[in-house]
Image (cartoon, rainbow, N blue to C red; front, side, top):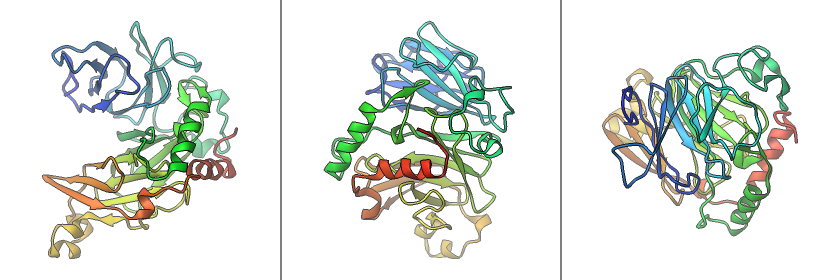
Length: 331
C-alpha cells in the first residue's frame, strides 16, 4: 500500500497519527518517495501528498509537539523528516521535496558524509566528538525507524508517568525534534546495525549497535510503557531487548539474543544459524508485557519479564546521563 496514485509500487508503512497529526489518522510511504496523509473516512484519495527525493522504505510519526512530524528512512540509508511548515523549529532548508503545508528536510544522506557536503547544518553538530564515528549512517536500506512514543497514561509506575509527561512538555525543541530522551530515534538496516539518533542535538547518529552475525536487522520498536527500552528483530531469527538506562553496550536479553526458533519446535533448537527462519516485524502489546513477532507465515507471542515492563521512574534521566557521560550529546 501507500501509493496514492502512480508510483505506489513499493513498501508501504503505516503509522497512527491520532495525537500528532491534526487532520489525518494515517500516513503511508512508498518506494517512489511519496508520503500520503489520509483521512480514515476516505481511503480512496489522500488528503495530502508530499514527495521526497528518495526511495522510501519505512516511516514513523513523532508523537509530540505541534509540528506534525514524520521521519522516514530510505533504500540508500538516508533519513528524512517532514514537518508542518508553520510548526517546524529552525533547522534550515534542504531535503528535496515539500508541499504547500509541509517541509521536507534530509537528516542524513546515508553512509559517511564529509564536512557539509550533504547535510544542511553539518558544520554545527553540537554532539560532534568523533567525526569519523558520528558521521557514519546506514549503508543500504533502512528497514525500520522508531520514534520514542508518548508513554501511555496506564504506564506501570506513577512516578515514571509523571517524569515522562514533565520532560516531554518542558523540553525544548530544535529543528523540529524534541531535545532530551523523549526525542530519541532508533533505526535498523541491512548493514547489520541498529543506530541511535538524537536529531534535536545532531543530524548524525549518536552510536551504532552492531549485530554479532552478518545478518540484517529487520525491525525496531520502543516499548510503549518503558521510556528506555526498545527491541529489535534480525534475519537470523533472534530478538534483542535493550535498556539504555542500564547499558549502551549490551542488550539486557544477552549478546546472543532470544532465538525465536526455540519456540517453534523441538528440532529447531539444534538448527544451524543458516537454517533459521528470519524475523520480519515485531509489535509490543499496549501494556508492554508481551511482544508479537512475525517470521514468514508464523506469528509468535512472547511474554517479557517484570524488568522489561515495570519502571522505576528515573529511566529518562539515566539515559541522558549515559549519553552525556560518553560525550555523545551536549546540553
